[in-house]
Image (cartoon, rainbow, N blue to C red; front, side, top):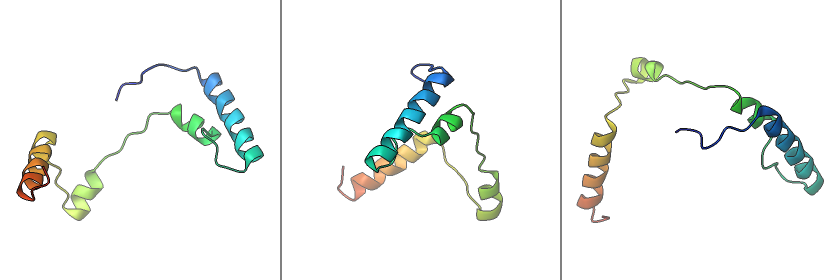
Length: 79
């Protein structure tokens, strides 16, 4: 998914600090934390290679998955 807008890191850190202060003040989880701000500054990539190797995972094409889901929902009279 493409980002909607680019936000400067200093704004994210400022918002995170404010969110953590608000969370402590009102005794709840912050809306946005420093951990999330730090994480937002990095790209995260994942691989399914281990699942393929160890679990015999075999992903299917997105269109095929949608078709299977629609067929199952139709069969079960849920669609």
